Structure formats: structure tokens, C-alpha cells
Length: 223
Image (cartoon, rainbow, N blue to C red; front, side, top):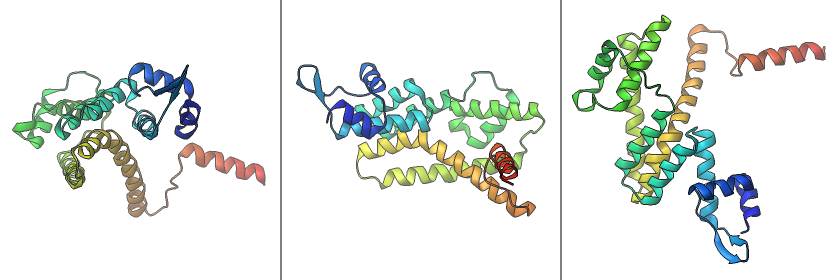
């Protein structure tokens, strides 16, 4: 297909496609004539992946480049997990030091073998921020989060092991980590709304407050 068709099918603009090719995120097309290249289904699949990672996953160009490099190299799933976790953590990690108290709390939960994992410090810094805000996380609250994380991690690895090829497993590890975070956060929002309604009785409209306000104003104008 021509690049114009590739752009139409993928929803990615021509300048962006050319930029991805220059940056090595997308392989160039096959030359088929003077100043003409043809593109195939692999190019379309890669563009859709890049859109998912950058627009939905929020990993940025640099993060997408690292994740796609893992896929192109055929790295083992363990390496893919490590790279994807590093990419995702880079978006939320401020780099500020965590307090010793919060570090000890997280380390006590994850165990000695994983005390040095970068995510431990990220979690500890979040605990510090909660403490400063006046809404410190209680031990039972933190332990519940840890149990939920174990369930999610087990589901991730169950799905990975169910895939027959190493390339599929690597894709699950790399792409699933980046986009799985988005799915998990979104499902948590829905669960919070459902649980709030169940406990407090009054139905909570799932639309954001700004949208509910606009809807009420429109209804008043209509009258």
C-alpha cells in the first residue's frame, strides 16, 4: 500500500509516519519506484502499536522506542518485563528520596529478595506524599494493595505462560505492562464508583462532575 493509504488505515498523519521512520520506530517501506515506497500489514500493525503505547499508554516517544526495540530484538520475557517496568516507572518517578520509614514499610511487604527493586522506592515516595497530605496509608490499607498487586501479577504471568511462542510472551510482557497499567487504573475507578454506591446508598453518576454540571445547565436552558 502507499503511505497515504497507510496513514488513512492507521489514523497516523503523514508527517508523524515520516518522523517514526527517521527515529527508527517504524521500518522504511520497500522501494517500488522513484520516490515511491510500498508498505505492508507489518507497518500498519506497528503504527497501531505505537498509537496504543504513546496515546493510551502515555510512554512517550523514548519509551515506545525502548519497548519496540525489545520486541524487534526478540528479547526473553524477563528482559521485556524489566524494560517495560522501567519505561512506565519513568513517567511517575520523581527521583526524590524516600523516607527510611516508608522504605522499611514497603520492604517488609515485598521481602528481602526484592528490596532493591526500583518500584520499592517509588511506592515509598508515594507513601511519604500521602503522609504529608494528612491521609497516611494505614498498615491494613497497604497490605490490601499488596494482595491486589499479587492477584494482578499472577494474572499477567498466567496469560504470558498461555502463549505458545516466545515472541507472543515478549509482547505480553512489554506491551501488556505499559497498557495493563491503564486498564488496571481504569477498572479501579469503576470499582471505586460501584463500591461507593453500595456503601453510601446514593447513586453516583459515573460522568465527571464538570460533565454533570454542564448537563444540568443545558437542561435548565432547554426549559
